[in-house]
Length: 341
Length: 258
Image (tube, rainbow over all chains, first blue to last red; front, side, top):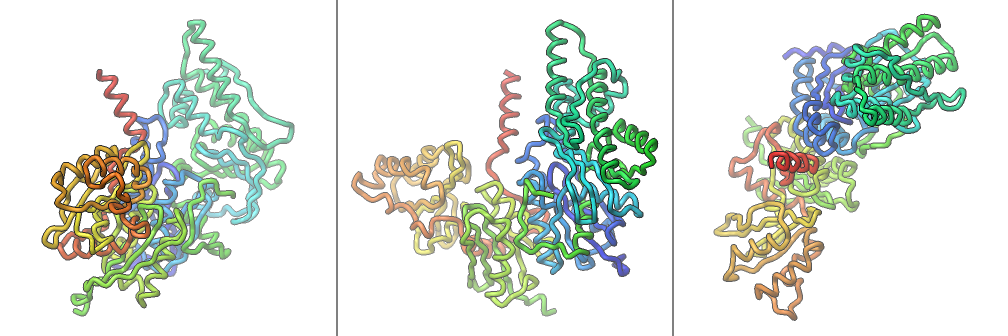
């Protein structure tokens, strides 16, 4: 078979940090040759959330199949690959280590360099794939099931954390509220959908802004607020309209995210704002940020919904920019469930 | 057609227990082994250990013809590190894989011993993963099937297989520690030992008690010779137990039916 390599720098990337098994091939950092994602959402739905042991077992079963598919779709072989990138953390340790063990084995067998990538760096890098002209510096809002961060991306490998959640991640709050409303799993898309038919001002949940000028977040109070509201309604025997609660809750989360993101953009200067992570697919967050950025004369960058979810292409992009700056790992690479950015 | 005559070199991976090891065996049965000094950092150590072993043998990874993996039971995480690495190596190198039942591999730990080989691993929740094997006319036979057992239940199964004590028994594995009282009581009550006998008579030496890649390699060579090597995609771990959450879910479903 004729190789499609044609002097391109090819990165093979693996992502297994939570419940998505993904393998991608990326050319010159930003061109996706293939990005195969095998989701375990259906597997975990019966449990109402991701079960680490179950996720690890599925990653092991799926990875070699996903790899074959990704390589075939991209039309390259392992010998054409110049770099192997893998999510090294943070995430579920048992899930991470499947990807890392395989990445190391591929790198060792084929004699290729290896780069362990921080998952959040990957989410931010999804924007480099979506927007070929985007380059640092810029502020970024990263929101997912496990993370809520405001980051000043100063260079491809230089990050300053401006703010982070002090308790629950935004996506975590979505999952918990969806569960108590009986909307099912995963919570983010379910709430987004339900909220479309609800009145966001039916209840005014408290927006927790923390100290003046703080770019940190706190969502556990909001979650408790929703629970208390639902309990009070139940005690009074009043009807609960899930769509209204979902809409009111979503608005409370999104208003805080948008206010803090706009503050971060003001602090860092410049005319760019980047959105990333699983919750970046939320339709209200996207539209409100777009409106606010428009008013402030800021260009908003966000990935298409597919690149918002956990995927290996974004890891391949991040690995490429690490490699260019010599940030590679040797064969002792480990899994870092609490990895720092 | 030089490839056709290329002699077998099987790389064996053992990461199911507290200590990881790797071994290389050729078709004449010569084995070389590398064992990790560190406990439980299998993910970090595995490839460097393979690299050291190959270098010691004057070989490169491309010279390996088969990847053998100790398939479990054992530590779930350990099993997956070995299996994910072994599968990916086989896939990348385009060579077949061999899955070796971990409990069965203990028949190779002491070639001199010809009795009932009884490995047992600590499976927590008051259980052990265990099985029993013996040699008969050069073939390894199963006496008690591999499963998760209450230690007393396993010991009763061993006794049930050989009630006339035609064979000596020997216990292996990290399950010895958690089952020691049960083993002692069982041995005395079945008269395999008298009250005053040292229980160590029926236990493997401490330095030969745990999983070894060299044993996995020897077992793998037999499997390969019997045509049991398979494509990487068919390599599967053996946990012998469902995930805790799956077990609980099934319990709840059964209760709902009642």
